[in-house]
Image (cartoon, rainbow, N blue to C red; front, side, top):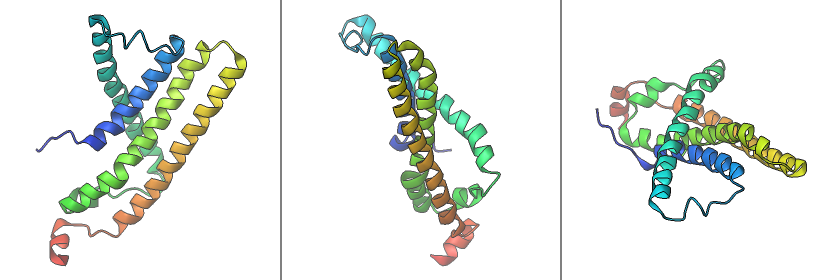
Length: 173
């Protein structure tokens, strides 16, 4: 098995985790990031833990997406994973780079925003600021969810046009 960490999937997991950590940490520390970036040895360790933690948290969001959201969405039209797995390499790579990575990123960002809302809204004292922040986060989450649903519909259409078996791909080439 060829295992490589390509940039697109890493971004689809790391960015949502970092978004969550930045929002939660920032709301708890008065949005003062100077102490983290001060440069002493303890802060470097915190930044390393923050970076690794972001990927792990992104993986948690992705597991939630994959386990619960995909099961719910699969009650409608499903993606034909057999066609994707058996597709020629360039077609599968393009599919991942242009559609699937952004689909995962959209869902994971929406989940990270919603999860961060649970942690950040309590830390803000001003009710007006709290309401504005909640509104902005919910609008952004809705935007990402809408885009993810749109991407899923496009992915289903694209994959429906692909042949089922790898041998069929070789015959048409």
